[in-house]
Amino acid sequence: MTRFNKQNNIVDVIGIGIGPFNLGLAALSEEVNEIDALFFERSEAFHWHPGMLIEGTTLQVPFLADLVSMADVKSKYSFLNYLQEQNRLYSFYFLEDFHIPRKEYSHYCRWVADQLDSCRFGMNVESVSLIEKAGEKRYEVHVRHVKDQTVEVFESKHLVLGIGTQPAIPASLQPALGEKVFHSADYLKRKKEGCFKGKSVTVIGSGQSAAEVFYDILSDDEAQDIHWFTRSKGFFPMEYSNLGLEYFSPDYIDFFYELPQTKKDALLKQQDLLYKGISSAMIRDIYHLLYERSACGKQLNTVLQAMTEVNLIEETAGGLSLSCTQWVKEESFTHETDIVVLATGYQSVLPPFINPISHHIQWDDQGRFQVEREYRLKTNTMGENDIFVQNAELHTHGVGAPDLGLGAYRNSVIINELARQTVYPLYQKHVFQTFGTHKNAHTFEEIKG
Image (cartoon, rainbow, N blue to C red; front, side):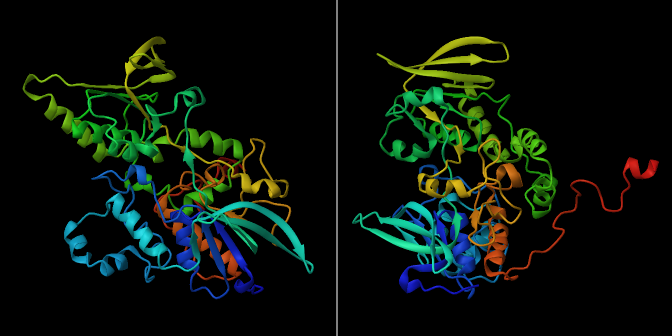
């Protein structure tokens, strides 16, 4: 690979956004001589879902799904090395739990970020364009320093987009956003402001975030009453069996990637509980707390109602009025409350800085990225000026796209592509089951023939 001069703000690759995935890429590529990289993040320090670092919550994946271990267990940026540096290794050993506190994972990521010179915080990427100098094409990246608002220009042969996701809020509910209606991403901030004390609170959503918010408010016992509405068919657990977990593997990515896009889209709609459900442990904790609170004839101040769509939220003199539908019975009703927490998930949003190069990118018929197996976007400049994506390939690579456990694998693929050599070996056959047809099996057509 051609070597560029960082002193002149010219590097091999620029990563935009520093969440866990691009942070892992920065850590794994730090000592790769063939890759000179910079990563930009508009926040002034590393933050990982700060509004949902609720006391007692854990990652939904084992600690081995850290930034580097699934690619290089010897890395100094592993979670185990972090524990050793923090003098917590024995404590973790005695804990005997693979699932670590969420706030500790966030602290671990910040510990890694603080050691990486390639990670630049407080720098907001405003635009990216494709330029040509001396017969060579590069990406020109304009970055604004958050503190002093000055703009600096960098050049790079390749890009990696790791901008993460943004809160997803149904269009019909967006007009109600404000002090009384907010997304779960702001939950802890609003809780610290005391907005739930003595109030009637309604949580809307079906996944882990909704469950954690409901449980935390219920545990504090400060709210007057708590309602939990979800349009899902029930409060169901996430699939977490050993064979179910094998869907979060390179083997399944290989299988899924080769399917026609119509089959991919149809299959994803049937796999919600692989990555969108509630952990069995959280369901158990909620049920135990409800049971305890209802003992000795005590009346609960809670309502859990599935199969319920919230269509509209309007402010009234006394608080908020929710127009709802129980969609199975096709019955409409209104619900009065003081506060609404929208645990309605997250979605990918195309950043404005990509507009100047959008015509170089190839889009599918639904306006989504077309992504190669190696996480490279299909563009008009493929092979010369590549754009790689992190967690923007659910529709092409399957349910493992947002999973932390596959982050190091994806970064291994990207690093090998950037370095044009095998820096991190990509082993075959990680699972016991077969996705598709076993190589020794015969199809009906082969037997008939």
